[in-house]
Length: 203
Image 1 (cartoon, rainbow, N blue to C red):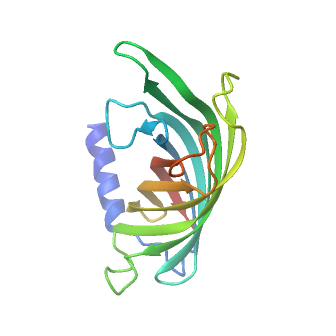
Image 2: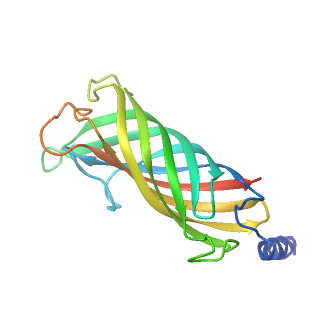
Image 3: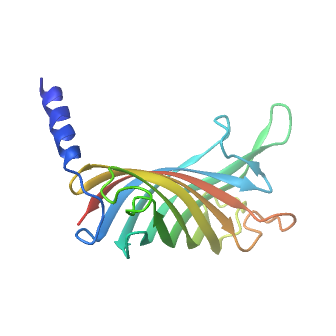
């Protein structure tokens, strides 16, 4: 009975939901997800059998106009890659703690032109830049420790289930502007991907 009551309250709240507009210019979100490596040591993207590592995040978005927000986010977690060296042998070639700060512009499809501004389901794109600090977790000298700049972008959507609250999913990608974080400087630069799930508060 209590579960039915709770679901009913959430349903009624969602009917009254409002988008982030000039009346609610700010959104703070907390959450987390998983991040996967793609580079000289192999590709861990979109393969459930490959290793991914978790992170936590916090972000702040500020309304600029109907179509654009400015977004600042910070996350910290682990990233790694285990490359197979033999039939039954695998070696952990990269394992690091990565703390990331990103500044980006978010383009909102719920802008009154493509979708209603108060649409409960609101997709978006974002593009910006980040700085990433990597430290070796096991001190095995598998990671070239330091700070690295990235170009960041991605897409996602948010669902506003109450006047001031939303749930969001973001698929983000990052391309390191400098190479060698895994001590390999030939070929393309390393990249990573993040799946992020957050709970946001609008005010």
